[in-house]
Length: 265
Image 1 (spheres, one colour):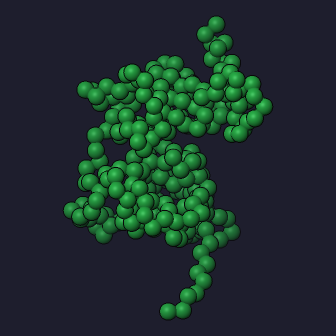
Image 2 (spheres, helix red, strand yellow; image 1 turned 180 degrees about the vertical axis):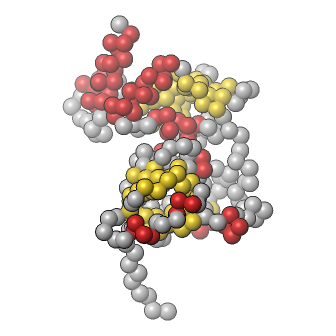
Image 3 (spheres, one colour; image 1 turned 60 degrees about the vertical axis):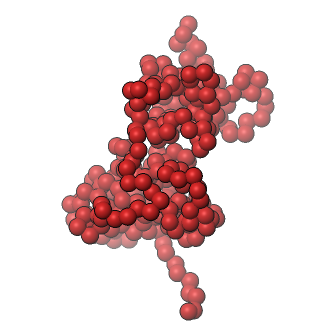
């Protein structure tokens, strides 16, 4: 069969708090109420294309895994199995054509803006198409799921002490870092699994790494709860005084440390 070039142009782009791949939930339904926006391109007559879309509770979004530059025939799933599986038997983003498909909750349509939740789509992702979700034809709850377990697994409830709450809010307001969402996604399942997450353990406490920040927490197995006790910088005093600034974030760390030092005084 003759190979022909196929050109697909975006109809819009996603605006989301999920910036890095490790911030996204394994499935969109686990993302909760975080709101993302699909910004459709102007001057394309898309105002007519979305007519009556707001009558649907869920939609399919076809988009590009734009941060992936290569594909893998075998991938390591984050859950359910320790063995590699074929990429076509997974939902991993490392695909030959970088195409993603997510069933998200439609919140509202406002002109060329489509507001969605329960989404696992990264900020800046090009969107290629939107289709309504139809339960009678799109849902098959009794279908076999191969290597994937049908149950979601044991879920932990995250709780935050006052200090952690204050620091989470400061980072979101001043540095646009959403550590609350990251911690929720990383810890609500298997919160002590250091084989697949950047977790270290010291006695009865754990620390989860997020770039140059650290999240301290404890786990109650009996109550299935997690208490986040502290948010801290991963930089030492020597690191912060050094000229090198690989991640271009030392100024934020210094401001963070100064602010909370003054609060204690």
